[in-house]
Image (cartoon, rainbow, N blue to C red; front, top):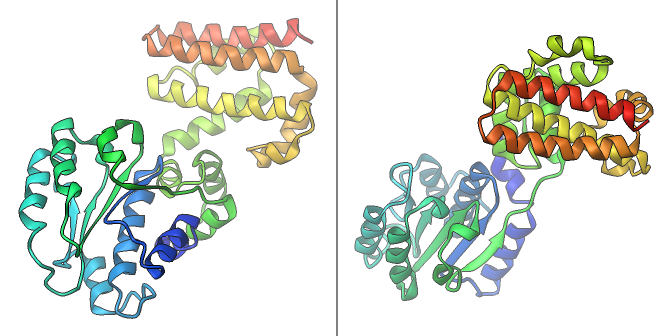
Length: 322
């Protein structure tokens, strides 16, 4: 799966490329997206771009090969464990003044800065304030709100955009096309999130159960049967609420003929039936109830009771708001 080839088509990469060609590179960057996998792949891509002997991320020159193998002495990747700590920042402080060994530039990659401690970020702040000219920092975060404002004021911040479904589909190969479509629907255009869902059999199973539920649950006598598919455990219930929310959102959109905004296009035939069963008013009320049950789930309410009540509420709203 050639992720980096696809990442190079992102607008933010072109912005970075133009900055380099115009000799306008900053020494400290923060790349932001909600997907940690995309973030780490992107910093690897940029490291190759900055050091590639052929200036095109050839993948075969000595610099590209060493970066791919994780053995380039001038590309140092942090954190060394799961979370960026003060010890990591201290290590960078010791190495930042050491001249590059193979290239004319030394790159410090710091992934998931938003997960680091305030103490570690404060130490990094002192390092990026006055770095040597031959040093560049490539940092990533899923949530810039968790990055100190003092650091944000000293870095060039760039957002990594989502991929469209077709581009992402071209990047991923699997024999199970149905599961891939499910993953693409919920992956929100990010590689890591899509892969997590694709490899999560419980999520795929939950999706299929919710399709069965929304298609076939017609009367209250069926609630005990369908409730079993909701109350397996808290994570399963949480996924079910997420999936049902998506389904009813699409139904509501169809009531206003905005077909281009439908997320689950593979269910369009089922939706044409559900639009007749659930009025726009009912659909809107059900969406609000799903949010209510998400808050109740967070308060650790009994799952069986919660599932029974949710399904009863859906049916009640459906028939009262014809």
